[in-house]
Length: 336
Image 1 (cartoon, one colour):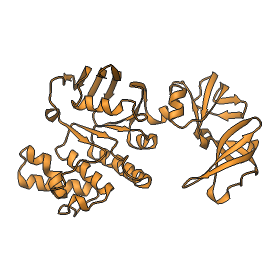
Image 2 (cartoon, rainbow, N blue to C red; image 1 turned 135 degrees about the horizontal axis):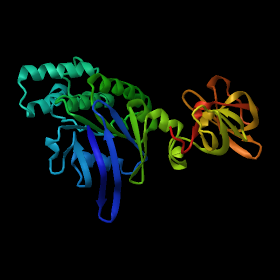
Image 3 (cartoon, rainbow, N blue to C red; image 1 turned 90 degrees about the vertical axis):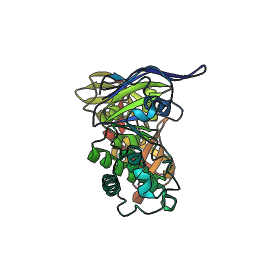
Image 4 (tube, one colour; image 1 turned 45 degrees about the horizontal axis):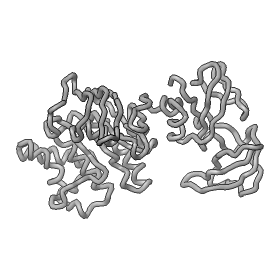
């Protein structure tokens, strides 16, 4: 198990990571999630031993202070893969095994097995420069997994790819990590990616870890409004909850996870959908997404976000009714 206790990283007078603490159980995947510049990659590099840091990083109770990077038994995958362009695919995957002195037959079998695992069976003799970006990242992952690292560190591994490919590779990567039983720390700024990959999510902001929990709990109950905004909430309102029913000025909302009493809610654009509902308004703008249309709707003296199906999108100026979808509503600061 990896344990990070009170780790702080400074660059001159700038404190990039402040008193960060985190645990990763054997075989689990934790996503370190936050906006660009929040310190998440710096924390990952401190865990790897690439950045000097105050505090303690330990594995199964053993302090790793003074243990060099190459002796920590950790694998690393970066945004650009950092493959060796002069080696073919098999040569890249086998690199760590060769450095460890693994015999040829065992090495070849391990490489073949990993290429099958990452969906690149038969690619061993190809030049890495002939591969697509997604294929290169699969090779980088196979190379990192080859020496059987006790911890895999992935720093924005999918961010250089286009959106559709990122989504597909996130699903594939989640499957691969679980199939291999790999303990992993994944750094990402994309909450969809984090929630796809991870068993637990640690949200980071301005150098500090502000919330840690299971993906569903973080999604439903962000720690504060800033975290809720980062997770997509754009509208906030107060309500009073009793036995899972919350009274608000938008009408009642069924939220079984809401604690009784006064609550603060955050609404994502998907919280309001065009349909048979209690709210009436006028469409003032619309933006097409791949699988829905995002609307701006004037409801009384408020402007709200909503969504509509691509095939049945009301035009600007149309009168619409809106229904609340609880899946798009968060209860801020509640204990998830």
